[in-house]
Image (tube, rainbow, N blue to C red):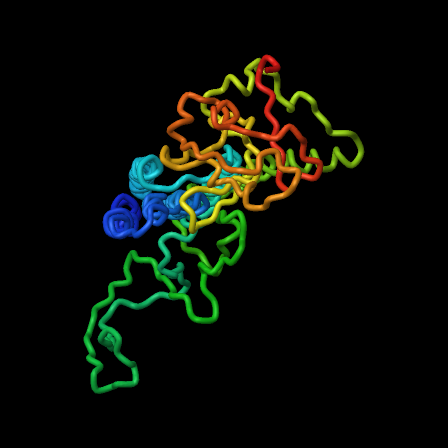
Length: 372
């Protein structure tokens, strides 16, 4: 129940983020320090997948003892989805794009394994119910009155002065005798016996199941074994088959390389190019480590404030050498570049016609659609 509201509420409150934005930002002495207060709260995608997997696994693990966990787990996941979606759009900082590999791996292995584990554990729960460690006995009592010693809770049995005796009457007619397990051996300590069906877990000496429980636990045990085998064959069977096949034959399949969708990179509106950057936590914006004079600014991956200069964030000008194509920074701000695709289109742009024979930084080239 705590997973439903504690995590989402703490994420939505964003205590440290609000303190940074509303307390430290107005008191910042320089603009760069103020920018750092608005970078967003750090989050780790691995932690989010761990929390989700934990919720699903706990629900399946204890579902046979408490079926209402399915409803509580569904509510918890729905609340987490809504809160994380809001935080992703409004509170958290940007993270690198990693694709769908993590989601596919989690769905294929962890979530499917949680279902299999829930079925297997449920088969043990049905076999060991009702967990009282009481088995059918061979001895019987004669009807009559018996004197028993009663100890208070948390009382030491050696304290004879606090023991009280009472007389009870036992009627043994039409009743079954039972035995209580001792410390040496217990009827329900079956260990790793699998599948937990009556023929494997019960003996003539240790028997505790009713006829109905034997039927249900037998069906559930064999079903759990079948599900486990299907899971292993489905998830790992193809991997083992491909590995063994690769030892004797070539396994290259060009059909998995994808098909040309006839969509040019230059025609995509919302996509970033691979621009070498240095991200420093003490800086509000990353540092550029290449020549981007001919690279469209929309591919940069981040936006520089309109009153800042683009060249101030490029370390290319920090190391001066003779082969530099452009040795001085432009004084123009980002506001003056509004409507321009590349830096070289600006009126203040000046460059040398010589080529760098020994470049010190990375080289990024861009060939737009149409060959221009």
